[in-house]
Each structure stands twice: as structure tokens, then as C-alpha cells.
Image 1 (cartoon, rainbow, N blue to C red):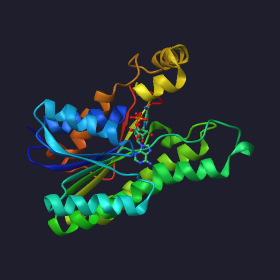
Image 2 (image 1 turned 60 degrees about the vertical axis):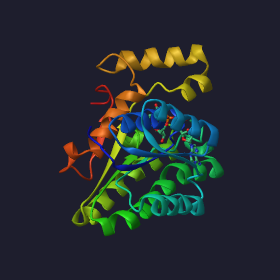
Image 3 (image 1 turned 45 degrees about the horizontal axis):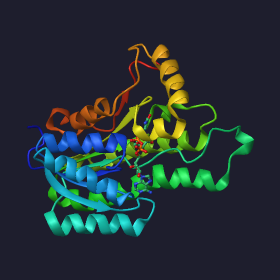
Image 4 (image 1 turned 90 degrees about the horizontal axis):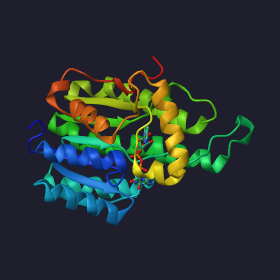
Length: 252
Ligand SMILES: NC(=O)c1ccc[n+]([C@@H]2O[C@H](COP(=O)([O-])OP(=O)(O)OC[C@H]3O[C@@H](n4cnc5c(N)ncnc54)[C@H](O)[C@@H]3O)[C@@H](O)[C@H]2O)c1
């Protein structure tokens, strides 16, 4: 087991990728704190991992609210006295693709709040627990759109910001035994995506991407979870400040 008795916080743990990461980490022996804004779906993730022999707790929190993030970390500190791993997954694109002239101020702000500011504040709180213990692994969820994506301006800016922040934090926390890395998946098949698009449009998008990606398919949540596991484990002990593209070769 690669994460035996590690205390691991996973945000967005009710979602497609977050749930896969929570289950994967629990399967590797981690004690998982599953957090999400969706309380009951998050509790379901905990139930699923407990049914497979894992353990942890489920803590609802809205990552766009600084006080809720602080309360989440406070609870972890009180209950476990330490935090070994955080995987900041909560996020999503709040602004439909548009021409640049159509950028909506509020939706743009929501994208930065949900995807970038939440990650920065979560890492700040994690650092407060990890620095004194001289150990920690932070894994942040970017996206392949960090390279730029036409008409996805604020989401791409947020995910690109995560990469810049990850590198900056890696530079400053390395001396405390803390690694900070990011994940950048291309299209991942998650239930929320399929539900939002509807089966037919999803099928078209998936086929179009599968044809473009050299590996001939889109990613599964488990593809992403295994990469998160790698970065959170001792296998990646000497890796920090990196972004791992999980893209099946897309945009090489
Ligand atoms: N699916 C993809 O193709 C893809 C590709 C690249 C990156 N990503 C990123 O992966 C992450 C997970 O996405 P997913 O594909 O699993 O989608 P998802 O919608 O299934 O999961 C997102 C989760 O974040 C939670 N969330 C949303 N707002 C929140 C808030 N304010 N506070 C706390 N939790 C909140 C949702 O409840 C949901 O459970 C996101 O950051 C997304 O941007 C997804």
C-alpha cells in the first residue's frame, strides 16, 4: 500500500474525478477526508470507500468561502493533528465559451473564485499544517486548457494560474519537505459532463476528441486518480513544481 495511514484531504470528492481519487487513495491505505459542497453525494463517497474497507470522514465545505476552508482545516487539525496530502479537485467551468467581447464579469469572477482562489487558500491552510511537520504533498487540479483554449478565457486563465501558483509554492515550500504539483487532464468522462451535455452531444464530443488524441480515447477518472496517487506517493519524492499532462498525447 502506497499511502498507508497517510491523512489525505480530497476536495471535490463527490465529483467524477474527486470520487475516483478518494477511492483510489483509500484503497492504498490513506485515511481520506472527503470534502465537497454537495453534502449527501460526499457522504456517499465516504460510504463507498468504507464499504471497500477504507476509512475517513466526510466534511461538506464550499471552497469559494474562505471561512469554510478554514473550518475544514481546523477540523482536520483537531481530529488528526496532521495532514499529509491535499488534492484540490473542486472546480469546474462556470462560464460558457464565448467571444472575448461577451466575457461576463460575474461568471469570470466565479471561475477565478472556484478554480483559482479556492486552490490558493486551501494550499495556504495546508501549509500551516504541513510546514511544522516537515512533510506534505499538495496536488492541484489544473487542466490541459492551462496552455490556452479559444473562447474559454476565464477558465483557462484560472487553470493557468494554478500552474503558476503551483510552481511558486513549490519553490517556497521545498525546504520544508513539501512537494507541490499539478494535474492537467484533457477531456475526462465524468457523469456530470455527460448529464450536462446530454447523451448525444456527449457522444459527439467524446468521438471527436478520441479521434484527435493519439491514444484514441478520452480519459477516465481512474486515469487521473492514478496520476494523483503517483504525485502524492513517495514514488514522486523528488518531483515538485511540475504539471502532469494526462492527455493521451493531445496537443503534443
Ligand atoms: N472532466 C474533465 O474533462 C476535466 C478536465 C480537466 C480538468 N478538470 C477539472 O477536474 C476537477 C473535477 O471535475 P470533474 O470532471 O470531476 O467534474 P465534477 O463536476 O464531477 O466534479 C466537480 C466537483 O466539485 C464540486 N464543487 C463545485 N463547486 C464547489 C464549491 N464551491 N465547493 C466545493 N466543491 C465544489 C462539485 O460539487 C463536484 O462534486 C475540476 O477542477 C475540473 O475543472 C476536469
